[in-house]
Every structure is written in C-alpha cells, then in structure tokens.
Image (cartoon, rainbow over all chains, first blue to last red):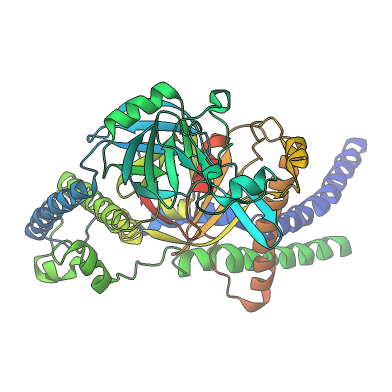
Length: 234
Length: 277
C-alpha cells in the first residue's frame, strides 16, 4: 500500500514537471524560430533538396547534349581568343596603393621584379577657396613619355604647401632639378613614376599623387617599360 | 484532472502555434519561393560586347520532348563543366572590355581576385567559405543560369570608409609650414566587416581572419545585429501578412584584414563580381 502511494506520488510529480516542460519547450521553439529564421530556413533548404533534386540537363537527349558540348567548346575558344587580345602587348607594371608595393610583369604576366614604392598620401589641402587632393589615381594608364634627369616644374600647390608665395607661371623658381630622381615615366594628367630623395619613406603613402620608386627599381622599370606600356594602379 | 485538461489545451494551442510559425516563416518561403532569380539575359547588350555567336542562349530549342532520354552522368557533368567555363570566360570578357576593376570570386580554388581588363591585379587566398544551403542545394544547371552574368552591387554596409582623406589647412608662411612637417607613419587599419548586397538576391559577407580589437568587435557586432533585426522583423510581419520572402542566399568569406581592405577600397563604387563555383 505504501509502495503504491509512493509510486502515485512520483507519477504526479513527473506529470507536474512535464506540464511545465512541454509548453515551455514549444514556446521556446516558437521564439527561436522567429529569432533564428535564417538558420531554420537554411536547414529547410537541405530538406527541400532531398525531395526536389532533379537530374542534370533533364529531358535532354544524348544528341542534344553532344550538340551543346560542341557549341560550348566553340564559344570557349572564341572567348579565350578575345580575352587574349585584352592582354598588354608590352611589359607592364601593377601598383598597389594600399600596401605601397609594385610588381613589374612581362607580357605573359610573370613577375619580373617586385618592391616598395610610395603613393598618394590621401590628403585634402585647404587653401582659402581652393581644395587640393593629393591621391594617386586608380585605373589603367599608359606610359606617355620617358625621360632621364627630368626637371620638375613645380605646380602652385607645391608653393601653397610650403607657405610660399606663388610665382608666375614661367618663373625659374618653379624648376627643380633634383626631386624626380634619375628617371621619370609620365602617365598623364601630370602623374609620373619617378625617383625620390626620400628613400626612407618608400613603402609609406607620402606623395602628392605620383608613384615614387627606389633608385634601383626605377632603373629596371625605366629600362623595361617603353612608351605605350600599361600601368595598372589599384 | 482540471490541470491535465489545461495542460492538453495549452499544449495543443502551442503546438498549433509552432506549426503556424514554422510554416509562415520557414517552410512557406523555402518551398514556394525561389531565392535565386533567373538571370535576365541582356542579349542585345551582350551581342555588342562579345559577338553574336558567343551569347549563351537558353537551350530549350536544342531538344524536343520526344527524344528526351537521360544520357550518362559523366557526359552531363562534362557538359556542366564546359558550360561553367564558358559562362566564366564570357563574364570576364564582358567586364574586361570595361575600364573598371571587378572582383572574381573563385570558390573552387578559394581565391578572391581583383581584376582590370582581364589582368589579375591582386589575388588573395580565402581562408574559409560558408555558403547558404539555398545556393548549395540548388540544381547545378539552374545555378549556372543564376550566375551566368556578372553580379552588380546594389548596396553595401561596411565598417571602414571607402575613401578617407586627412584635411589640412594650408600654412600662412614658411615658419608655419615647417611646424606642420611631421614624420610620416603607417596608418592603422580598421577592423573590416563588409556586407555586399548584389543583384539576383546574392549577399556576400567579407570578414577578416584576424581577431578584431574591442572597438572593432563592437562595430562588427552592431552591423551583424542590424541584419538580424531586419530578419526578425520580417519574420514577425510574416505572422500576420503570410508573405515572407526567403532569407537572402549568402556567401561568407574570411580573408586577411589587409586583403579585405584592399578589395573594398580598390573596387569602384558600383562594382561587378563574377562568381565561380
């Protein structure tokens, strides 16, 4: 009799717990489904794929598949030919402005030389109403001209930045023979790949937009690239 | 006895609730809606760019239902491979004929490549990839159609600025200019977490492999929470409106912080992406 009573008591307490656990579980499941719908949907897609998977190219005869393969091979060949035409026909240089590094490559895309350089300092110089941005432009450029010992004709911003009065356009004060180093390669809009007096800053973004290179690297680049060579800057 | 009845009533009501929520938020969107919309082929545009022959035209015309016989699996797989290569090359040609940089996400070789005019500029190894089941479980030939054209970016949320400039007031004289001269230093990289929403419902998440600092962690978690909240509110709305859209299929890649910064800052404002998988 006592044992039966004990058993009944145990059953009751179990029922009492179950009465709480089951609704609480269902409630939690509902909340979880709303909070983590993406996770549940992700599993549901797995479930769906088990029931809805179809064979590849359903309904295609072997002849149709063969035709498609021929057509595909032909398209691949002609697209590859067209892609090949996009490639530079001369050695080119790729400049990474984020890491201040360059990579000189031959026509096959193989790297000939890599090294550090300096690119634009991403600065906005405010001079009265004037806003001058010092950044290296990104994109594809072409070497327009190559020169040895090229003097730099200082633009207005060089004087503004130094707190100097701006001389007349043809003033001798604008000519600087040392800044650009031994070689300079023009890529348009006043931007150049050139040497530097500040070799210790190579690898840092310090320029006004041009790409500065170390003496040895610049010499190799000058001798490898020619007029018309591509310059990729990113 | 009363308790038992109340228990059963509550259990039945809650079970019905769970079934209702599961149906409206999970099963109905998954089983009735397509998360990967088909590519709308810009045939005339493509023809101008890649030539008349090369356009990948849907191939319903090449077969009739009468000769519909299943061919061997390896031939089908071979065709799929060829079509995959064809689609990728065609996309590269289309983007290569433009003057903008674009991203090639190669999930077969785990590479993210920044390209310009068909030239790989920057290549980075993807350390980890997570792809939604809605993409992984999609039929291979239909998936090929979905990624047959480059994806154009629609919206971006990022923890780092795309362009940043240091503002400097021009000095009045040489004395002030000399005072302003400071030794240049390497700038500190901010923690990177990018959410790129592309057309055709694709979301690309780029995370850095390095552990973010405390501030970065907070910013990243705020951005993640923002997207979670959107999904929660959509699920709640679905309970009354019964019209929940499927969760965006997403690809999450983990790459080094420097590479993530380079990719984000080097891509144009409205970049396009080629997906290889």
